[in-house]
Image (tube, rainbow, N blue to C red; front, side, top):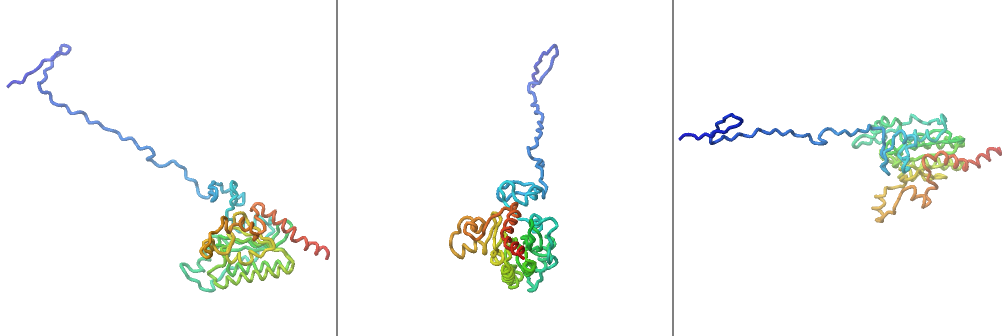
Length: 316
């Protein structure tokens, strides 16, 4: 059987096509995948550490330099950040007037305390990380025109806990101030007595209060400043026996923790329990003084409390 052909004329050219035209496969289509948006590395800039600090109360990011210049107080909501003992001393005393006492005194592991880590190793670690020998710095200095004995606790050293060294340094400070007829100011920040020293740390409560009793018999003033936190054995001893007791805003002050008190009393605790504001309303403390006003306020209190001493000295 012959194949039938058709003749097609196009512009004078003849083309012969078969009756059955073979199917021509369509050309392959190549699709180019577009890159996903955001699939690459984020262009978000990383904020270097040590430049900004987030406020725990208002969540504002505060430039560290500004925070240091403001004595570690948030410029927006006035939240008081923790501050080191030497920074606090620098903010209060007159330039080059502070003479530190017993700077080389260190704690001893008299009980050979062992646990997850030894007491001796903990002391070594904290001495290296804080640059201090123990949790308090004591010495004689000047605030305004007043020469006085000044003790400042540092919470960064083992939670500001009171061991034998803390008690001994404070007792020596108070006795030196009594000998020289000087007022005493102690700024507390502590979680209480140091458990690693057992009964030896609890004995410091009586020892410091005894020294303050002799200091008071000489008609010399003692001002206690409570900062966040001041609790347990420290609050139950020298921190609560000042002639004037003042606190920083929002400071946690008390003996046992709120959870322990709630479980013991089986009662709902009132709002603001164990804050400086709560205790001021109930008469335990005399005033709440912001950190930036502390030096000025201490000078005013010392002017008032030492007026009688000055008249006695003038009378001969």
